[in-house]
Image 1 (cartoon, rainbow, N blue to C red):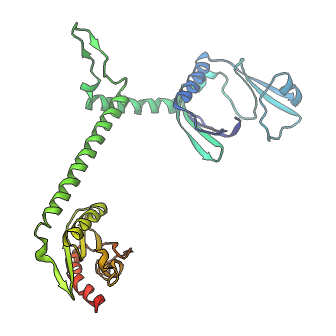
Image 2: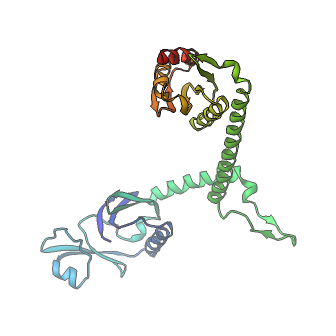
Length: 317
């Protein structure tokens, strides 16, 4: 690993370094601990001017970056036994002047180069204040979750209690996410059940066009996968038919056309769906037995589905 760039400002810093993979959260915490221990030691920053380059490297053991160009004489910055480097920038007189350092994030900036960003001094103070505000909000929302549960002997129990407000928030969000997914599944099932029940007497909407049974039907708020399931059910139920389904949701239109295998030699699903999709401002295509399309004009869906019978008739003529 070697330095690949940096930025040093009064209240924040950026350090780029070559590394083959990301730095784990535990390693970042270790780095943060090491740095802050040196800051709290308040070591004097020793500046040694006009040092011959070979003396700086061989006697002071100063870190020289590969690829950097140095003159015959350099400036050496020494912080006790912790760090000795060649540097021409400005520095604090004591490490304690830096103030507490908080690493904010680590990530990739290019192939093989990672970046650590941190705040210092007043920047750290502002960051901790914001964290404390968030902690107060979380504690207010999930106070019971954070509270210690008493044991039978009256002593507080830590079993199942989050270690921090952040952990409590994470657990609560995971619970909410699981609940949302469960409710989403139930809603999908209810919509599918409603759509299936609406086709119980679907034979009334089936029309025979030149000897071919054609069904055009609207079932709103269904996902594409649910439309495919329903079109399969209807093809199986009708035996030999062209099935056209349309669904509107949040102003968008989904269309699907299913043709039973015995009819694909005479009529293809893609040729049926094209003209219908145009009516709702969309287009689509697919296999001879199954085609899908989307559109943006939900208000035109009923009229588009009503023309499906004429589209099939024109293709069979």
